[in-house]
Amino acid sequence: MDRIHWMYRLKRSDDRYLARLVGFLKAAEENRVKNEESYIWCPCVDCKNCQKSVYVKVEEHLIFRGFMPDYTCWSIHGEIMVGHNETSNIQRPAVRLAHSNSSVHTTNILHVWMIFLKFMREIV
Image 1 (cartoon, rainbow, N blue to C red):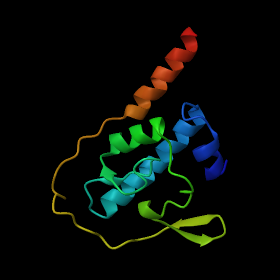
Image 2: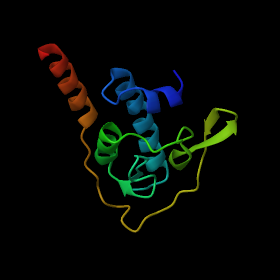
Image 3: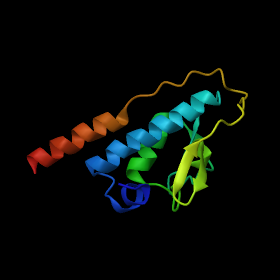
Image 4: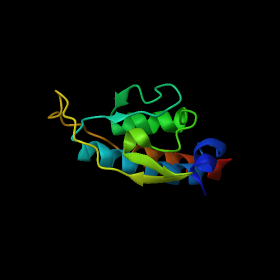
């Protein structure tokens, strides 16, 4: 399934959307760590990669708000377009933030959300 389909055509409560969202968040987190950043750029429809946040908040935004339009090459999160509809991970120079030593505690809200959705499906 291509990114356009899962990111923009599936319901955000769909298990397939949630499973692929985990892949995006993993890539975003790996890019954050590689660049020694404290926060992840949020590509939700409201933040539009103009605001950074902690992992769990980005996850929440993408579940409840969805991705900003046309963000199928995750360029802010370490990819480049190498051909028509092809992406590749890149090595960006590390950018250190003034607060890069702060510890960010994250939880797995996506896991809880998936359990909640399964529970709701069973009682309906």
